[in-house]
Image (cartoon, rainbow, N blue to C red; front, top):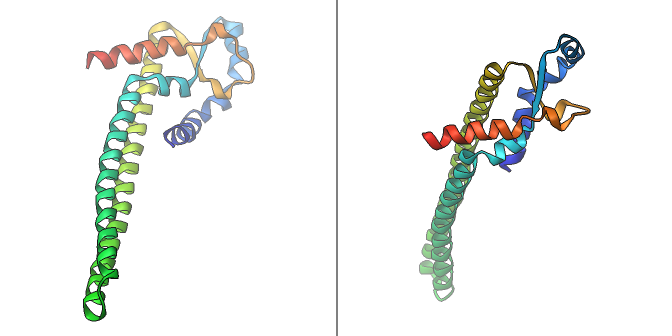
Length: 175
């Protein structure tokens, strides 16, 4: 789920790199430095991403526990309602219906809140990765650093993924 969102965002963010691929021939002729990065790997291997995933899973588990408690209450109310008749049963059913509506609202708001939090964090992490890649390129004298997904052929000598991962994770550890 998180990976699909990452892939769609990264493809759109770095699509322009594919359009400028024609510059690679000129760059080789002029001796410019060119590299590429596997953004999906950088994203997945970044400790901040891993920490965020764990945090989101913990929040999701907490919300699931709340939901399970409400579902158990609804089941208990239904069992009680089966033993009743007439007006008492109708009143109990109204309470059950209210609980079900509350559960549906809880599901919707929880899902929306977790999705919104995930989307925001993915966006922040991608911006951070882009900034680190730009800074890395400038400090290391690279003219171009491409997303590996836009390359038809790539030699492993141009792969900067491990170096970018190291810079990202080292800077995250310092924070």
